[in-house]
Length: 348
Image 1 (cartoon, rainbow, N blue to C red):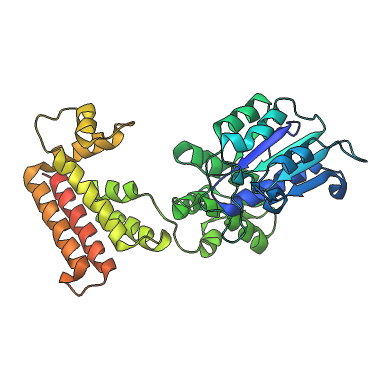
Image 2 (cartoon, helix red, strand yellow):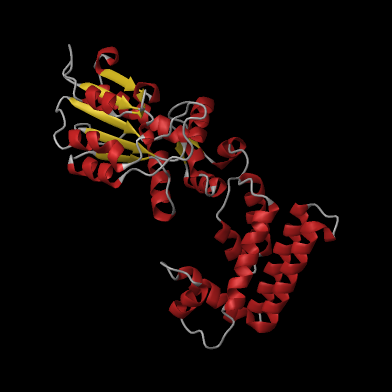
């Protein structure tokens, strides 16, 4: 793990439990180095914080303030730190971080209490704690792959650090196959290492049998393929959403309905430019989705948009029993028809 090992505190976070756990293991191993783990490391879990009056952060702070014995440093690993989700709850820890013990490496693992019926949704890190970590010279380790450039950078880093080497076609095939499920990458790389051994150089033919089911894709990957009139690609994106993403056909139907409705709402000659389109759609922040919807409305025109509305309406009826078709077939036919209409509009 390429992080500053002299920092007084590390905040490790991320939604994927496997990636989070792997990051903690790697970080603690790096912090311990050649030292004696049994003497250096103290790990606290939710059980340590669970007092008579609820969750108490005092044991965590006490452990961080304890001087090392027979070693130069101590590594305090605070698992389930996500139980302290408010400014008041983390106030003692924020106070400690204002003047952290120089012989302690504190690892805060932002995860929820995994004991049965103890904690529901994991809350965000309180702003006061994030600021305290930064001010103290701490390190934030975000294990989430992210999106766009951040995800591409995350994937590149993991491929670069892997013990096996993939040639360019194999890398491209792997990234395409994973889609939005980049978090599967570490497990796949471990599998390839186990099969071929460290140091192996692998091509597409060697990698493909171990990739498993194609990963999920984002909804806009489907709608972009439809807008481009690319029927085969649109169907491929649909199948990945249904199988790899585990989406129900009704969820896909909602995505397609929203996509068409947006364009219909922008089928108005008085709406000019993406800012006006965003205002008409009630979109705040980035105007890019409005820009795409406006371009689609202008390209298709009122008559073809009416056809799309009819197709979506019929598919909705079919999903609710008008036809004795499997739901997957209903949305598959709809996607093919929508993409076909878009292709015809592009060729006008």
